Length: 213
Ligand code: B12
Image 1 (spheres, rainbow, N blue to C red):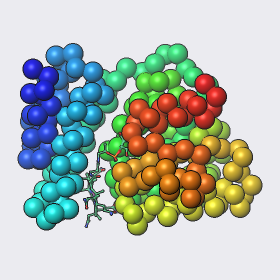
Image 2 (cartoon, rainbow, N blue to C red; image 1 turned 120 degrees about the vertical axis):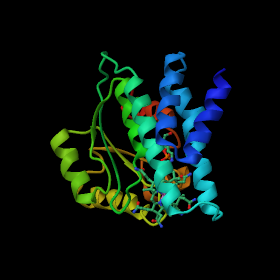
Image 3 (cartoon, rainbow, N blue to C red; image 1 turned 180 degrees about the horizontal axis):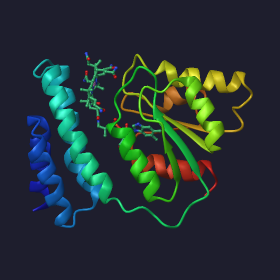
Image 4 (cartoon, rainbow, N blue to C red; image 1 turned 90 degrees about the horizontal axis):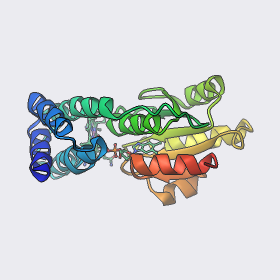
């Protein structure tokens, strides 16, 4: 039963059981569950629950780390199962997690979905400086620069990118998109980003809109 798989996924992530999470990811895929549904209904609620338990002090850094490893491993298995689209869209998307921030599970899901939707994607990884975003955007001839931030303390780096692009006269050249759990439409508007997406699927939809598809 699909709902049992989702429950089992949540449980494996909360327990931080790497092997079990991987096994459930593979089982879900072999039963024909859509990869994105498996993430959205099973594994993401699992890691969110871990975040909540960490928040209230029921769970601590060591447990957070093992749960994150289980999540990362399962997400990799599922990401690999998202088929890459042969039909290229005319869009080049540069993405990374901002400086000072190592959270990259969500960003990596966005990358998989963008690729699956035909975007050409350059993933700079995590802890990426503003200067590097700007240099790589030029090298890659990006249409869109996407930044991920999971910490309220690193969100200002998203503003710094907008400021630096404006200062360098590059704001018109690239569209910008911001994401990450604490990031809101209000924040995007305040800093002058072109779009904000609360999920990978919304990110792909907005990215297409931004480049006029
Ligand atoms: C896993 C995790 C970790 C892992 C990260 C592993 C990794 N490789 O990513 C580890 C253990 C390393 C970690 C460390 C820390 N963490 Co942490 N972590 C989390 C946790 C539990 C889950 C994050 C996650 O992966 N979510 C699942 C993914 C799928 O969701 P997502 O990232 O939001 O991404 C989705 C959307 O937001 C969107 N999206 C994301 N990025 C982008 C970008 C674009 C362009 C677009 C379009 C869309 C988009 O699409 C994604 C898919 O739908 C959160 C709690 C939470 N619920 O967010 C805390 C949390 C983010 N961490 C927190 C903290 C405090 C820390 C530490 C400071 C702890 C410490 N004292 O050391 C360190 C920070 C280290 C650092 N410098 O970055 C706090 C942040 C609080 C705050 N107000 O800022 C949280 C909220 C926990 C809490 N409740 O307190 N963490």
